[in-house]
Image 1: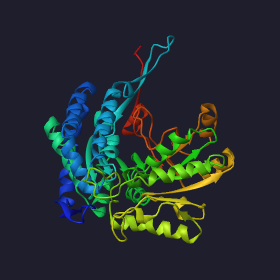
Image 2: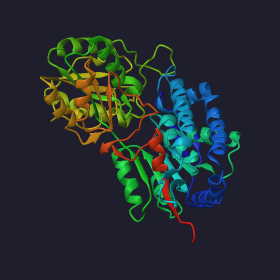
Image 3: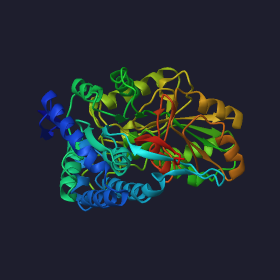
Image 4: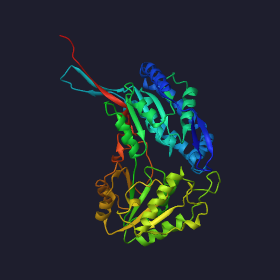
Length: 461
């Protein structure tokens, strides 16, 4: 059995049966049997099933929001937004499937031969999803994989097992053929057994760099698609011509929403020297307005981190930075719920930081941000690229051409201007360096859940 400990009060919120080797074997056999049936349906036929599948989840938005809050601690007022985003993303990917999966035809008027390329499903795929945005991370792989004709086995985090259960109920309600979508609650050892099995044809993982390495190691003897969406240490650069109020408001939210537990959350900020003092003053003033507490309370807009260990890791980063000369501008005493050796951690704004400190180089995944003063674009670019990660970066400016020119030199999968911590389903979501490999979302996202098959037909003489 697995127990989900709620960060709200440390109690067991949910207990689920842990699956083992026999369950894996049964799931794989069932998936293999379902694949030819599902893959032979037209895209339009699959779209009807998957639309009903998605809608079944969205219809239970309020109940699911409460479950999310209990499982991982996000304030209840914010959790329904995840289900709305889930629905928006899913429906977009369903809507572009026909175009994304269409044949590429080679047209040559002088050549009577028929030549074309088709996108065909991979087969049985495994989706391994995390707890921090349990629906928004998993939908990126699940819906395109199913729409492309694959069958899916989902392994979700032990922290959010009810998300997997919700998916399974929705699949049954939508009438998906048996074996097309299944869930398994697996420990690390059995997860490695699942994805290492020869019947698994593709793996899509979202999580830590260490987790991504473990997934790749489990596939060392297989040549199959492996999508890895890993960590980030995402920077923001507030340029000299930025709208100060807009940049402060959005970057505070980008740093502290979901208690900073976002792969594309803002973890380090570089501010042009002409705006630095005013930006820091505004950032600190707005941060002090947060209310940390029980996420079930209406006034709370900053909940606990997912676990005490996670909060203590961030505390160690902060202590190390302070020991090296950093200064904390938001007293923890302003947040009565913030207590040592609990998941409740107040937001921290650090200045006098540099890249010798882990808080500016190692992923924090918590409510802390470091702010540095820079003299020009060149210095900001050097610091933004001085990272093992490369998921997103955000530029805050009024000169779009200048931002585009700078953005092309930034080593990330996505560059934002005047926004952050956001996924547009029409754009490809990808990372470079240790932020992973592969692509989800947009029409390009279908490339990674299919393989190409070429046809070169010549008429007989």
